[in-house]
Image (cartoon, rainbow, N blue to C red; front, side, top):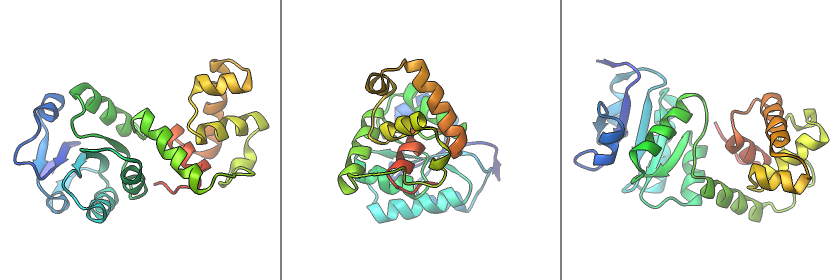
Amino acid sequence: MNHRMSVVFVSALPQPSPRWRAAFPDLVMVHTAGIILEQDFEAGSICFFDVTLAEPEEAKNSVRLLSDAGLVVIVLSGQPAEAEAYGVLTAGARGYCHSEAVPEQLQEVAGVVSHGGFWMPPGLVQRLMASALKVAPDLPQPPSEGFDQLTERECQVAMAVGKGANNKEIAEQLAVSERTVKAHLTSVFEKLHLRDRVQLALAVNRLPFH
């Protein structure tokens, strides 16, 4: 059976959350990742994976399998945390949010990842980057391949993103307008072949991503 561009939910719950159903009335729900792999879902279909009751390693392995099968994986967590976010993102997830997110947010997350982006709660992005900096606090030069293509100002913007700064904070630090910061970021994304600031922050902090 072929579900063209379906929105699939994987959860141990007996029924979809009312919020999930409100966001995606035609969702398909299964109870294990293995069931999805046995079916013919079109590559690029959105898969919300509820890891609330899953063991960390089991969750990461399932995310990796689903991602490798061509699904765009968004992890739902009952208690979002930096360590879990890092684990599932490095396993191939493209989004990470609370399992009780409101329908509008679930739709927003699906829209972002379906267009090639990553999605995480902004506050969690900053905490994740702060945690990474505790592991490697001193970054004397841009660490990832391609950073030598950046101008000095682009490099400064990229490194600030890596520390979790938002556009307003970067503009204040560099004494430029937010519009200028956005322009520099657009150039950085193009030169480094990155989709968004989450990928950029991961690259700056030497964290792997898919």
